[in-house]
Length: 363
Ligand code: NAD
Ligand code: MN
Image (tube, rainbow, N blue to C red; front, side, top):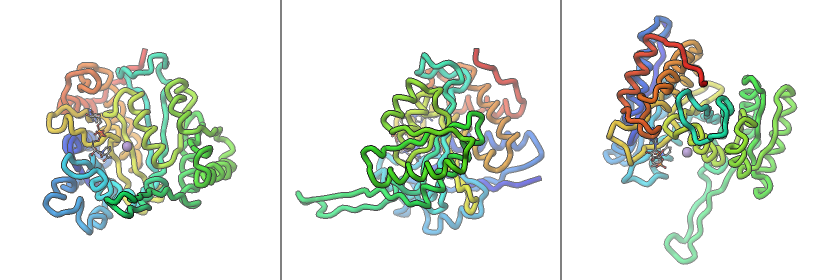
């Protein structure tokens, strides 16, 4: 039997509710078969750790994670600590330290979910957004001078490298090629940003020649938001910069019904380091500690984790269990207009992975 070592980092807010739920679902899945098992290692990093130690994770934190096969992450963000400290001190430290340069964000409207796109036929919204996850607008380059003075100035400099753009474009074209429609949209803003984004477009053009069977187009990021709403079926795989994809994927999640459903993987495609899987939502201060958090985004992230480990059959089984649960409105949490609690949804998914049921198809 194979053993997978999984690091669990719940972090802050509802991360502390959804990550244990994800672990419970993975445990139920492992118990239902004999091909693999999990060894989970918890890490108590985040806001509380910061209050005790003055940092979000230990100095040798990355070393502690290095031997793991994958990381299941919750959220970084504490009501009493500045967001740039929590984000840069934990999540970005891991993403950048482990060079998880491809951030993959699938979006679909799951069975039973009432999305806001009323004119959208079932199946018309089925996207994967690939986010450049290592540089660009979030490179961390910049500074502040004359702080507090009238002449104060500050910069956040977006840095794009040829190597960084090449590798994310290749990853996105390869992913588009692996999906049935073989369709990629390169999101850009090269009309207004006339240096790095022009290079981005040029490299997309170069890489496209390596993938003659992939159809691709270019869309300006602002126009892309409208296209997502008005013509969702015209999109399949998208690739965008760190900032653009950050924003587009929250829009995608909302169009698919709720921020609470959307998953993501921070992936090192070269597998030099562990990859990290997490729901895209944050700490949700307004509902934390109340058992109201929707755990589906974490469960779907567990599906991506299983796919990354090469356990495609187990991943498909978990996805089927999730879809059979979303199909039942009695198992919808409050963000979906229901009354179910985190524990109800978790119990239902655990029961269904133990005893698989057919997935209801949309009418
Ligand atoms: P948020 O995602 O935490 O919450 C936005 C809204 O969506 C809230 O109303 C919340 O209740 C709701 N929501 C989110 N997830 C939900 C779920 N699973 N179930 C039900 N409802 C859910 O975003 P925010 O309010 O902008 O940020 C709060 C904190 O989280 C900030 O500190 C921010 O920096 C941090 N954050 C962290 C990450 C991360 O670690 N990956 C991502 C986004 C935000
Ligand atoms: Mn975001």
